[in-house]
Image 1 (tube, rainbow, N blue to C red):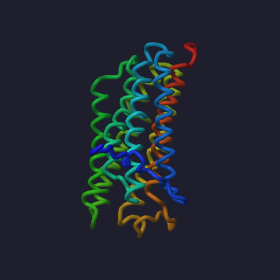
Image 2 (cartoon, rainbow, N blue to C red):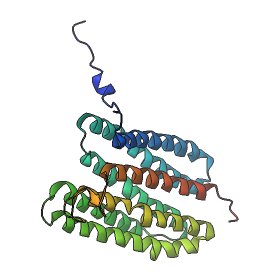
Image 3 (spheres, rainbow, N blue to C red):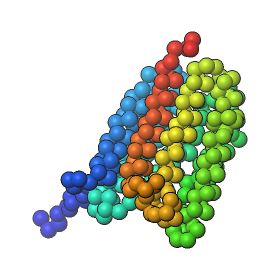
Image 4 (cartoon, helix red, strand yellow):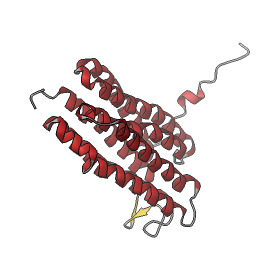
Length: 248
C-alpha cells in the first residue's frame, strides 16, 4: 500500500510516571464522560419539567469531556497549560451552568432578562479572565483584568445567593430552595477555585508567580479539580432535585 493511515495522534496522550498534572487531566476526561452518560441516561427517567435541566447538565459534562480529551493530549505532548482549550470549554459550559438557575426557577416566574444577565456576566467574567491570563500578561494587566472578572463573578454570586434567584427559589418551594442554596454554595466555594488558579498562573499575585501563601501550586491541578467538582456536582444537585419526592 502506497499510503498508510498514521494513527500516532490517537496515541498521543501518554501519562508519564510522577506527572500529577497529567493524572488530573486523565481523571477529569473520564469523570466528565462518565457523568455525561449518567445524566443522559437519567433524562427520560425524571419528570418532564426537569428534563431540560438534566439535558443541560449532560451537555455541560459532555462539552467538558471533549475538551479534556484534547487538553490531556496537549499537556502530554507539550507539558504546557492548554489555556486556549480551557477557556473555549469555559465560555460554553459556565454560561450553561448559569442557565440551570433559570431553568430551576422558571416555574416560579424567572424572566428571560434574568437568564440573559446571568449569561452576559458569566461571559464577561471569562473573557476578561482570558485577557488577563493569556493576552495582557505583564505589568498590571493580570491584576486589572482579574479585578474586572472578579467583579462579574461577585455580581453572579449576589444574584444567586441574595438576589432574584434566591427569591424565586423560595417562591418555588422548599425543595427548589434547597437545591438552589446548594448550587449557590458551589458558586461561592467551588468557583472560588478558579481565581485561585488564575492567581497561581499569572505574575504579580502574592509576590511570586505560581505561589499562594508561600506554597507552590500547580495551576492546572487547581483548575482540573475545580472543573470536576463544579460541573459534575452541579449536575448531581439538579438530578437530586429532579428525583426528590413531590411532597418535599
